[in-house]
Length: 195
Image (cartoon, helix red, strand yellow):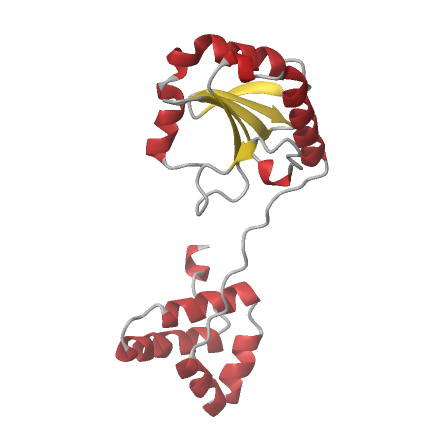
């Protein structure tokens, strides 16, 4: 969801749009969604999954679709409020009750519910691959180390590589390698002691 400061903004102007938000509510109430309250405002869920939310902002009131990125949006109503940040959330903004078209809104919500039923969600982006030349060198000199390292799951390999390569200085990387080599040889994952 958005940052904390933005969340408070969603409901800060709710009073300004009381009638308008009630109108949107009566429309959403005609669907199979269940109303809950999250982040201080109404959020409508299907099978406990957030589908749409309502809110009043300074200059507009809006309905937003949590997985709006999957909507066809034939009527070109939806916007991404934060291009760089928001992957799937889309807003439909209104500045007056006259702009609210119940039939269109219900079509969008029906599509959003259908997408939810089909399980359409954005998968978290894959982590970048990390290469540690120093560890590679170490493994080339020590076949047992290489073999032990390859037995770890990709996730655990990633943890080791990230730990080594997140060090700024070469000498720190070397000291980290010295620390993890015995762990790798003993088949102990970097964070196993915390699991």
